[in-house]
Length: 142
Image (cartoon, rainbow, N blue to C red):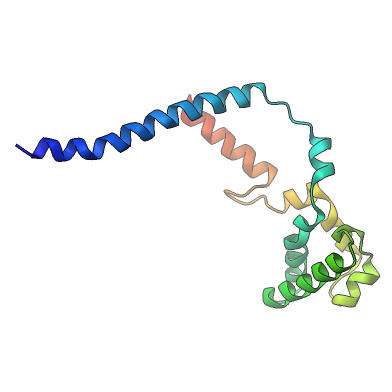
């Protein structure tokens, strides 16, 4: 006699969650439908320190072990914050003071679109990867 009561106890939170998710998805669909993206505003507001990981990856590609690259970039970020400088304002000569691995191609790291392309791996946040994930999501929905 108690078997069916036990099963009812676990269903209530499930149905509450499903009901809440249905409301969230309706709102989300309307947000996406009416959304307008102004890329120039987004790019203006991006914090240059977001590129710190890209700077560490650059040093790794130059042969520095990641633990050392992390330390170098940490010192660079510390220098920038203490002197109220954006990360992207440092010259090659200034960067070279922190590590001799920095060469003239480091300036490519400070370009947002280049940074995004560096994330083009399966499941990553790069443009091609995101486009592929969107295509797969659409295939699931249709």
